[in-house]
Image 1: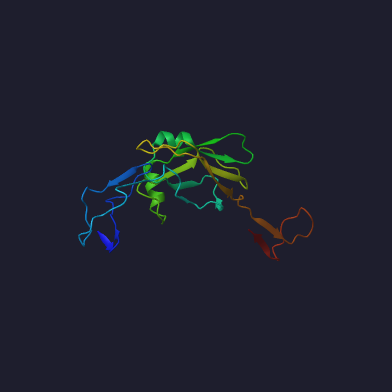
Image 2 (image 1 turned 120 degrees about the vertical axis):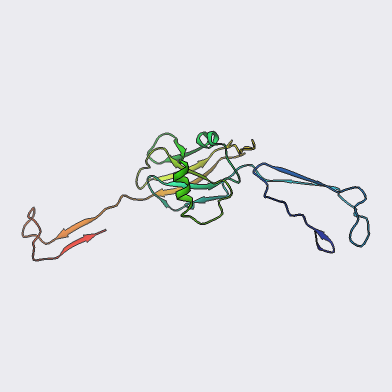
Length: 193
């Protein structure tokens, strides 16, 4: 459709999948609305980048749970075997990569029903296979070679840094008649979180 006298636009029926290419060729003899011949370039092409994490929940830089699930918009469907091979976790104090696992479909649907945002038509929901150490810095790593369902592969490695939350702690204090004695029932008992 013509947007204005000099600009023609085409609306794709659906967004391009990761790694997908598109080419437009002008028909020979194409004319504008006023009858003038369309001149200049006759071939146009563009492509969508390979799979890469367009959006992640929780957002990088924040705090995560020891067993956090991550929602990733990879730009389209990702091959499950590639996700489990080419995406991993790293945590301070753990000397090796921590594999990720795709969450079972029922758990995935439950998690997705509670979040808002654009996670695309086929969001990944993954979790580290090991419990993360409390208080540690951790990374979710999107490795080079993550493969989309159409065969396109990511071209670079990206890391997303988080801090694992501290363990829950509560401190109880009270007045005592002497050290090691039970709390006095006549005074206040304080609980600090």
